[in-house]
Image (tube, rainbow, N blue to C red; front, side, top):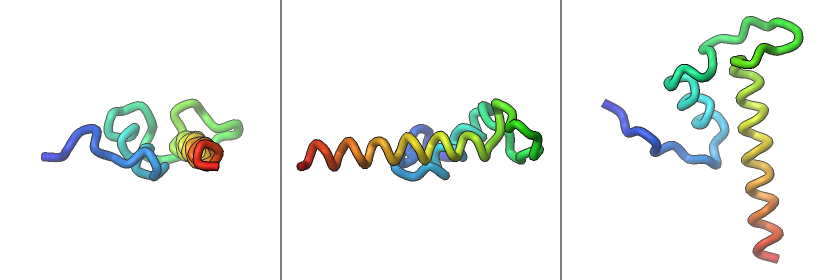
Length: 63
C-alpha cells in the first residue's frame, strides 16, 4: 500500500494528488467557466500560491 501523509508540502502537484486520493478534488477538469470548487486546476493554483507564500516567508525569516 502507500504511505499516508508523506507528501512534500513544497510540491504543489503532490498536494493536489493527495487531495484527489482523498476525494476532495476531481481527477479531471470539466473546463467550465468559472472553475468549479472541486477543479484540479483551481486546487493546483491554490497549492502553488500557498507554496510561494511559504518560500517568501522563509526568505524573510532568513534575512
